[in-house]
Amino acid sequence: MKSKAAPILEKLREYKPYGSNTEDFPYWVNALFWAQRYRMIREGNELVPFSIDKPPRLYPFLRPIYYDRRRHGPSRIIFKKPVRIGATEFAFNSALYAIDVFKVNVGYMLPGKAELNDLAGARIDRIIQESPHIRSLFDNIDNAGLKSGRSGSLYFRGANSATGLEEFGVSYMIRDELDRMNQENAALALERLGGSSSIKWRLDLGHPISPDRGIDLEFQNSSMHEWYFECPHCHAEQHDVTSLDHFKSIVDFKNERLVCTECGKELQKSDLLNGYYKAEHPNNPRKGYHMTQLLSPTVTLGEIIEKYNDATGIPYLMGLFHHSVLGLAYSESSRRLTEKDVRKLMKGGPPMASYGQDTYIGIDVGERGLHVWIQDEESVLRVMVVGLWEELDPIMEQFKPKTVIIDAGPEGHAARAYVLGLRAKGIEAWLCRRSGQKEGKRSVDERTFTITTNVTEQFDRFFSGLSNLQLPIDFPKDAIAHLCSPVRVLLEGPGGITRGRYSKGVAHYCDAGAYASEANPNLIPKQHIIPAIRPPLAEFLKTSNWKGRFRGD
Image 1 (cartoon, rainbow, N blue to C red):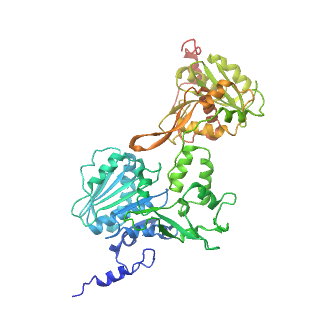
Image 2 (image 1 turned 180 degrees about the horizontal axis):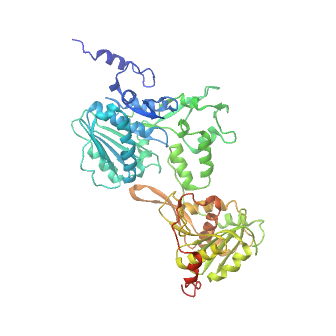
Image 3 (image 1 turned 30 degrees about the horizontal axis):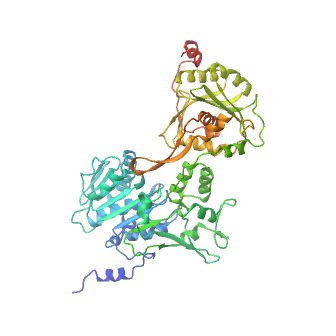
């Protein structure tokens, strides 16, 4: 007797991975057909069926990846990606598809608790609640770490703690943001795969950070599918961006448009989307995919160009541009300024000034005294060192600063008293507290007049802007030595993730210069802490015992 499934199997034999005529395929064939039937998404006040084919949700480059997530499809998929590309939606849909169709448990692994609360406690709950069929699969979704189902459950676990990794068994493991995970725990999670299920699936996805590690290494050991398209003018085949140089060759920055790398004529985003994948290792059973944010329907080329311009010359921002826009790993080499570099900035400059107007002043507390860096928008006017806090008063009179930023470290009480004194005179003054943490999260606390920032990022901004400043022709030798002292190196942190750090040595003028550059109003952080009620400034100054640097606090 002929099986009822025979007609369907015949259709599958004719199945073309890049085709779009899917109406007569049953929902269980792959994750996309299932999502289009059962997943609902909110558009305004309406719930509509999930789609990757209708504006503004145009994600044709995801179709082959969805098609791969099916019975007898590849067991391992690697997704090296930028942000805002639809990858997390794919991960969710494929997880729910596996629970519904194959009746299995799924593990969803994230780096830490913050991500768990955001992803499991908000996004996945909303997906479940807004889709009636999906809601019927679960008995209880109140626990952020476990969405308990009738025939399969969804476990959320954080990779940066081994707690809970031995408490569950799954048939499908998803590791989201692999590069940011504790790598030992990420590997341990794979031991949770097992059982007698008909599937043993893995999905690794994330923004690559370091070359030859994490998602970048997984991708290298896969089929290495890259997105290709043809120029509609000259029909030259070319691929989506695979390097920064490639990015710069396909983008016309001046006119804010895409161009063909062969004929130079303008391309539309639709030309890129009308493409296809080609694999470097097509026979590799591990399917790996890479694409860039140029394909995203929710990101404009203007936004991408702005991100690139902001990142140019600033290593941590350029790394972020590689990870989040190009979906590429980023590598830096150790480097420092040379005396020759500094003297180029001194060439043709005027001697150090004795007066100025509307300046920015940075002050660092060092062993020899208070190192002072004075600049305006275009040039460094003067650097010096003084021994006592009151010796700063005539400097303020002579250079009439817009903003003064002072090191909040070694002499915190005296520094705060001086800041308050400047503010009593109508001068914008702040303390600056630096940390090795707090990456990308500068903040301003108006209660204590304190800017808090990441030290590496602040030095990156300082050295990037230094090349645009004219140094005095008589810039002191010790100041030159201080500028040449810091070395930017890559250090390996928890989980094998590398981060840029400065080995500073003696660099007090660098610190003062970094504070002065922070004083520029364009750099003042936008994240403010609302001030609380505080004692009147005059009362603080009246009761303060501050006398000066070497006269006690």
